[in-house]
Length: 224
Length: 56
Length: 251
Image (cartoon, rainbow over the protein chains, first blue to last red):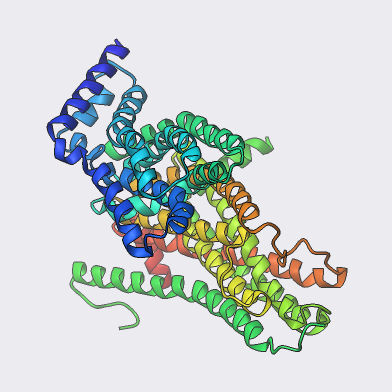
C-alpha cells in the first residue's frame, strides 16, 4: 500500500518534470553557465583552472540544486494535495516526503553527475580525479537535496522564501562542500581520497536519517 | 623581540564595541517597550473615546 | 513533593501574566549583576593584569573576545534547550523565549567576530584570516540570522516561532559538523596555524578577569533575553485581557 502510493507519487513527479522539460534542464544550464563564466572571469590558464576545478564544479552543483527548491512543496500546498498526505492515510507522510526528495534528486542531482565529466574536461581537472569527482557527487548531491528539502519545508509558510532559502541552506552544506572538494583535490594531487569520502558518506547517512524527520515536522507545522 | 607597536587603537575599539553592543541590548528592549505601551494606550483611548490617562 | 511543586511552578511559567511578572522582577537584578561583574572584570583586565611579554597589551582584547565567543555558543545551547522544551510541551512563553535568544546570541557572535578581527590585525597583519574558529563563528552568525529571518518572515508569529524552533534544533546537529569540517579544512590548507586564541599557556593571574567577564555576559544574556521575551509577549497579546492590567500598572 505504502509502496504503491510512493511509486505513484514518484511517477507523477517525474512525469511533471518531463512535461516541463525546459524547467528541468535549468540545473544543467545553470551548472554550465558557471563552468563557462569562470574561465572567462579568471583566464584560461590550465593550471589555475585545474586547481579551482573541484571547488567550482561543486559550488555550481550546489547552486544548481537550489534552483528548484522554491517549488518543491509549494504547488502541492496551494492546491491542497499536501494536506492529503496527512489526512489521506494511505501512506505515512514521512515516506511521501522521502519520495518527493528522491524525485528532486533524480531531476536535479543525477543530470549534474552525468554531465560532470564534461565540466571536468572544460576546467582541465586531472583525469585521475574524475572517478573521485563522480563518486563525491554521487554521495554528496543526495545530501544537497535532503538539506534543500528541509529548508524548503521550513520556508513554506512564508511568502518570500527564496532569499531565506539560500541563507538557511548555506550553513547546512558547509561540511558537504568541504569534504567533497577535499576528496577531489586530494585525488587530483595523487593522494587517497578515502578519508574524505568516508566522512562524506557519514554525512549522507546522518542526513538520510534526520533530515526527513525534520522536513516532515516542518511541513506539518506549515499546513496546520 | 616584538616591535613596540601601538595596540591602544585595537584594544580600545574592542572595548568600545563591547560597550556599544551591551548598551544597545539594554536600550533596544526598553525603547520597544515604550513604543508598544504608547500604541496600546492610543488604542485604548480610541476605543473608550477619551484621552483620560494620567500623563496626557 | 518537591517534584510536584517544581512541576506546578513550571506550568505557571507558561501563563503569560506570571511570566511577564517574573521577567519584570528578574531582569533588573540580572542587569545589576552584569554591571557589577563587568566593573570588577574590566578593572582587573585593564589595570591589574600586567602586559603579556609577547603580545604586549593587545592580549587584553581576549577579555572581550573570549567571553563573547563562549556566550555566542552557550547562547545557542540555551536556545536549543528552550526550543526542545517549546516543541515537546508546546508552551508559548518558551517559544517566545527561544526566539528572543536569537538576536542576543547573534550580537555576541558579531562581537566575537569584530574583536577577533581587531586582534588579528596587529597580530597576523590582516583583518581576516580563514582561521578555523573565526570561520565557524562566521557560519554560526549566519545560522543565527537564518533563525531570526525565518521567524520574522511568518505572518502568524506563533507558527513562525514553532517552525524556527525546528531550525534551532537542526542547527544544533549542524554546528558540531561545521566546526569539525572547518577545522579539518584549515589543517589541510594551512599546514600549521599560529594559535593565538586561548590554548597557549595562560598565566594564572590572567584568569580572574576572564571569569568575571564570562559571568557578566551570562547575566546580561539572561537580562536581555527576558526583556525581549516580555516585549514579544505583550506585542502578541495586545488584545488579551491580562494586558489591560499590565498597562494599568505601568501607565
